[in-house]
Amino acid sequence: MTGVGLNKHRPVIVLAVLGSLHAAATARAEDVDPGRRQFAASCGVCHSVDPGASARQGPNLRDVYGRKAGSAAGFAYSQALKGGDWIWDEATLDTWIANAQEAHPGTFMTYRQADPQKRKLVINYLKSLSASK
Image (cartoon, rainbow, N blue to C red; front, side, top):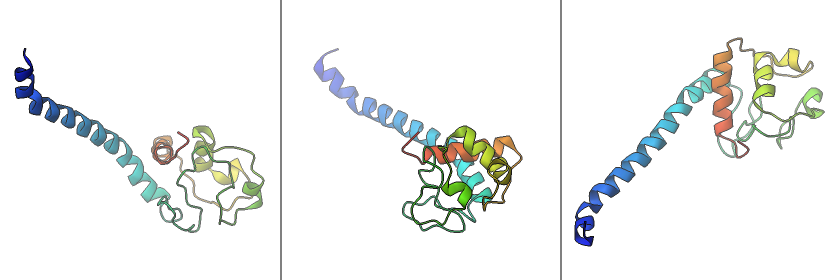
């Protein structure tokens, strides 16, 4: 194929590449949507994930994944969390969301989620919002 032949097909190639990129971005967004919905239903009353949003009843959870427990500025944590020596990861978030009072007695959070699939959706969503993936 000559250079002229390639130029003739360039718009089709560009559109195909752009279509592939759009499909990949859409797939990633669709993967996050169930987690976003579950977060809104389970956690959104007490927590925000919007960049720079003020704490509500609970701290802003943007970038919580990979963060040291009790370390978000501007939130009055319980003594159990202020003295926490763990990093929020899949395992610590899972036990926390399942039953925070049992995981770390003396914490303020009373919400419990018994369904491991719902916890996984929330954790994956929080992970997607973190620079520390």
